[in-house]
Image (cartoon, rainbow, N blue to C red; front, side):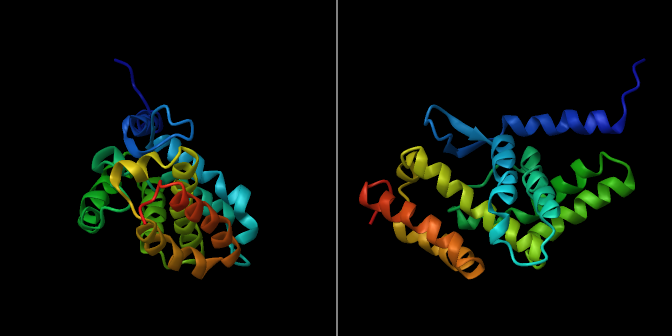
Length: 195
């Protein structure tokens, strides 16, 4: 009988993230992105936007958080950013998913990944706060460059996106917010975001 290591089985499990489709389309607009693609895309952001992080932040830890933050969607599915009620109700399901999936590894490695996920969710450390800001920002870029497909489909307003993004992003980095705001204003002018 074939003996397969915990690590291989864990990696096989992670492949299931490719089956979790999100509301957002890829920028070409030809299909929806999946959660694995989103995780890769947002994990590139510390390399690109690291200069907007607060001094002393461990960018490799931020990247690690972003790589694992949506693994729970294998069990819990993706919840649309503007579905507030579903988001609030999802934590227990996501926590159970995190414990199951990270528990596939040995105690130390599994616990380290679970702790990293919990830190991201708590949003209290400088690394978690920066990771959360980046995770909020990338869907805006993707939505804008897909011609606002998800915003149009869901009837999202300019004000909804401002309410969702402005406080956290502007509060963290005015420079980063000043890069995002023109996209939102242009999306409103083009009718991709309702007035």
